Length: 318
Image 1 (spheres, rainbow, N blue to C red):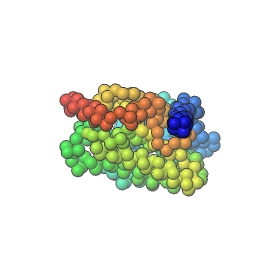
Image 2 (image 1 turned 120 degrees about the vertical axis):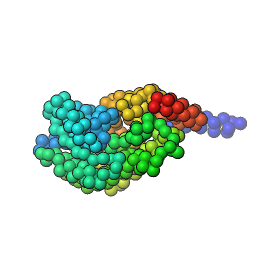
Image 3 (image 1 turned 180 degrees about the vertical axis):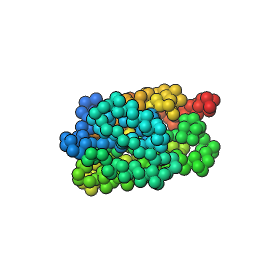
Image 4 (image 1 turned 90 degrees about the vertical axis):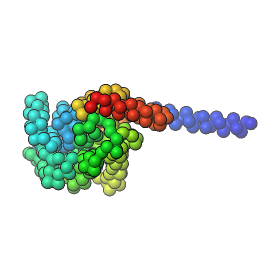
């Protein structure tokens, strides 16, 4: 009996130490540790720092564009609509007169090979000796990409719809990152930062089958690429973000359940603040950490029922 009590006490102590460690770690990552984003800002005026933001004209991408400008980066805006790009460019130049803003057009949904080459060429040859220091693989989307709300059934998707989801959420960011590896790893550019915007849908959500799968790919790509860069000795930080509810035009908060809602600019700020945290994959903020942990803890049926309810309401609204 005494030995059993000792064993249970030892188990309890180890569990308490584990919980304490995770609590301290959580506080350090989200509330105490200063961001390392400034290390990507050049101190050499002849080689200013640039950030490339894909899908930059709306939502999270637009939030990143504003936040990066406010932190001293010049920004290369990517999008598929030249008119929207021009409007965002003009707005940023007005709000941040000390920054340089360039644009490049490529249709991620169509896997535009020529457009992709244009993005790579522009990011590789920036004005005034500029160096690409930050890549934000933000471009992405769910059923709003095909004009069908936020959620939908796999059985109602066409082959073309599936191609669009895979192209936007997985193929375009993976191919773009691959094509930019020589730039990201160049000694003259070091250090560099790659941020990949994932989703809590990587859990494997029904009514969002292909989107969930592509976001899982996106996050796994982040971790694998980050480990490879570290293994090869390159000063390339890679962060994959498990993003929760963000209030955007294409996916408004009320259609996603209104849980732990963040604004696009607030989300961008949180992501940039995580630079230097030493993780491969994590929620951008404590606000999104909470629902992620809830998803991991509650019975699967509750999550499925909630998503089914959101799908039903979304369908009624469309």
